[in-house]
Amino acid sequence: MIFKRFMEFFPEIAEKETRRITLRNDPQAPDGEYAFIDSFCEDKHCDCRRVYFHVLQIDTDYKVFHAATISYGWEDLDFYLSWSPYLPSEMAAEMKGAALERIQRQSQYAERFLEFFESKFLSDPAYIERIKRHYAMFKARLGGKAIKKIYKGFNKYSPCPCGSGKKFKFCCMA
Image 1 (cartoon, rainbow, N blue to C red):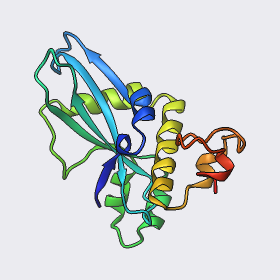
Image 2: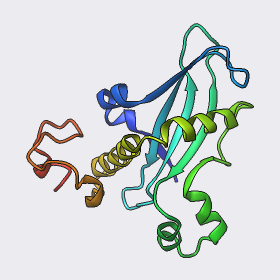
Image 3: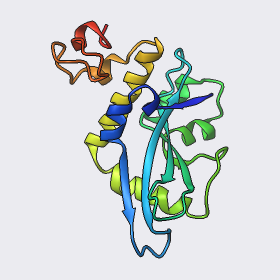
Image 4: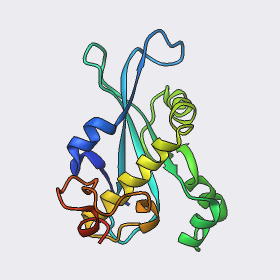
């Protein structure tokens, strides 16, 4: 699977909604500002309901580097088992929840950033809903079907969250 950054389709939304943390004097990670940049699978037919977060040091006062790649799947284990019935159950279990992505580059501080992600971000239900909304917007932009249950909280006559300027009913909801 090839993942593409959400910001490539929705730069204004990504600028406002990308989570960041600033570290100063943390004994387990270098000082600086870090962005958790979300990326999604660019296969319009895939409905894996997962996201990769590339954790990048973005503070120009410090050395820029890639700190971690975190994968996160928000559905339950049964979803991942049925999504890919040929996947061994232990691999399906890895798709659920947050984990360091094994096939991606990780820094020596990756475990610390996974701890931050789980404790600071995943404890916020609004943030999880934002991830789901980003996923649905991304898939809709690719021409895939938006996931209706993710969009259930939107007013269909409000402006579409994708930024098209159209009413939600006539854009991503369609």
